[in-house]
Image 1 (cartoon, helix red, strand yellow):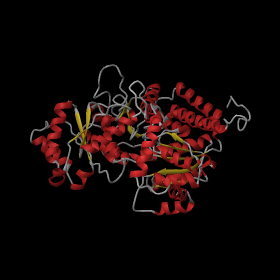
Image 2 (cartoon, rainbow, N blue to C red):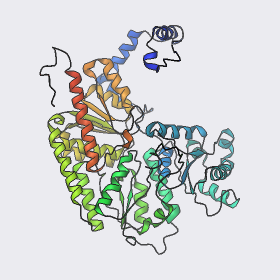
Image 3 (tube, rainbow, N blue to C red):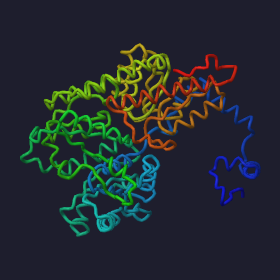
Length: 523
């Protein structure tokens, strides 16, 4: 083969050498039994038509690339946000391998998570024996202070009872009676990763506070609880820390995985690092109230905080963009009695200045987007504030109330009048929209690159460039450290969007003597 020890090449350009091209051509001719290229192209062209879109949107029996992940993935992320906590999945080893590699590829960090490796016998007889051995081994080997248990499809289909299994494990001495083992049932075949996060957080709150409310009352510790929900931009945790410290507000961020998912390379491996402490979650009922940073994905958490902690959870939107960040900070000021400091007022002013500088380039540009419910709502709001037009908003796992809320936001702006909101739809539906209702750009996670390539395959004039904002992002580095919340997050999103527009403009006007009319250097 063409690889040489002194000239190791990646797949590209290695696979473009003559030797590999011949090898791949032989494989195609002898083994693939593919249809003629003309027929493939005819079918491809048909899938870009309005006729196909109508058929595509009428399907009911199959989901194609669902634009969501499963519940246990969210449960693992929630557990990682608590100090010295080992996420434990009651299910097969393959499921946990998926969760770990998914986060590995996004965060570029090792992610600790264990399973009790249920196999065929457990599927028939139940997984209690696996739970006994798994809890005992996880505690002995990894020495966590908390083991947070969630489930996968197999355990849920056969009806394993986590509460009974964990209690039995303690009765038989596999773990100490007082060792914390909070849990949540997280069936993968319903809900999504955001549901799983919500379920796991409610499980943590229930374990540490439900039967320990005596002597606790709202406002006793003078703090405000913040619950982030399924959040993969590490900068968003940090922006909450920074804004609250600048305001002088006492607060607790309930689930904070920033340290364990962004550890320094200094020669020391940290299986556990940072996170919300056990004392902080136990003290959470004593806070003034609980603020949900992503309220559309935290229904169980909201219900628990209101019914058990007796908190009046404020009705706020995700603090993305100008208006919703203003509302967020004013509410925090009202709750805490602390004034919004000059530093944040200046930051807001700089953000407004940036919007003014970039407005001319974003005005009239059409964007389609997909992602989680709160993110998509916040991104829609930001685009409208920037003067950009929204064509389509797609969220697979949102409900009808969310759809009405999104449509109301769009209806309030002249830039949202031609937008359509899609719920229960997947990325194959989104692909159809990129051909039949072509925007200038789409916003979403890494999976959108395949849609971009399909639009380009039809012809360069049909290409819809992807702007990568969301989760997961596998094919770009370090974006997970950015922020989308607050004024700082707005600056990052605005910078990303306007420079994508300018990059595309340069791409379209680089023809020497043909399209480079003004030799523009300044934009």
